[in-house]
Image (cartoon, rainbow, N blue to C red):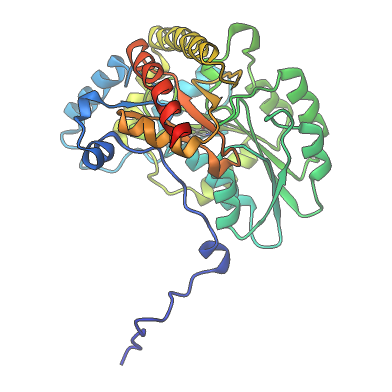
Length: 379
Ligand SMILES: *Cc1c(COP(=O)(O)O)cnc(C)c1O
């Protein structure tokens, strides 16, 4: 007879898995509507760095076409993502064999950890950088080497100095989330030249498409120079496909082959692949998204300046603002139908991260902010 577990007996979790603090996602609109008795239409969500334009119409049509063509998506997706890889390969001038598709770029970050980390190894990343680096490291039982930030951004020299004999992986977010800080390409190039060949660098460029022209740089050129570099990008932010979950990594063939060994065979679904091909070719949507972000960022910063609130100059589609009692201000904003992101879990308990929205969404947030600040500071 099979053994029966006693009710009070814990499941046999790995200790390093049990120690993980789960990822805290931005509050969904429907959840706030239920909790506070608000109408979903009156809620503004500026919490997850999504594109306020939503998905590009070109991607919507591509999905409709894919559904027609496939009937009911009853078949498995193309495991190798032929069309999307071909489109990416031609855009970046790299062989298709250098591309890994991911269920969001989150998946790419995880694949790197799965391929390279285990107990007895370590991973280097920066304080106040993306939460998934800690999750990916911890879930593999690897040791995290968290390097103190400099002016809230990455300190690349300190990160180089922190590399230990057992270090196999480093994560560098550029621009970084949640701080919005950016490392100029000359500094990244100098850093890459100094990283030992046996350490893989994941250069996470989730916000790449929001960079101003003077900071745009073809980082795939570095992939050609460095067999230990994996550049990670996503369709979730400027391309407006966050709900479909599709991202990609670019690395030389050997590293890509490793990632493929730990990848789920059907990790990117059929509709996401079709939408991503369309979005990739939609230069007009990308231009609109960029310009909307530029204007919205100015709007937010003017609002913060008017309230004498400190903010961190940001290169993404979000901005970190110092409000003092952030947990309270966050709650007061929720009551007023505005969802932003508290970042205490990033070691920034006095700050809120605000995603740039549509002009009217930014305005609603800025109108609610002084009231929320007064309520939070008074009570
Ligand atoms: C949003 C984000 C990602 C990935 O998001 P996906 O939706 O999984 O592609 C990766 N890195 C950073 C720094 C991000 O902010």
